[in-house]
Image 1 (cartoon, helix red, strand yellow):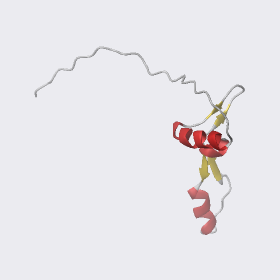
Image 2: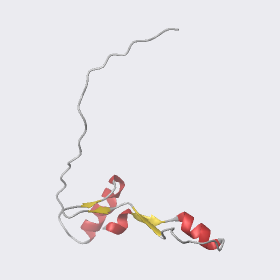
Image 3: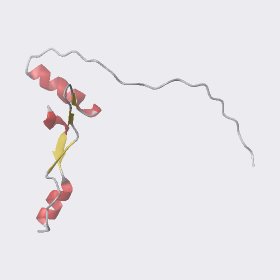
Length: 81
């Protein structure tokens, strides 16, 4: 699942092709984060994750813990200069 949020680092391969030092340039960039309780993946990985679980014939249960913020009332006035 972590590989769904990983991609090749174009800067690494560009430097490698030009025979420049690749020290301190990761070959792969991962946007996933692993904690004790969770594996955090970017939002764009959801379709690939669903396809992976369907291929493995595994049922999934989504729990959306996104905080959408607090609604506020605002009124805008036009300033004519």
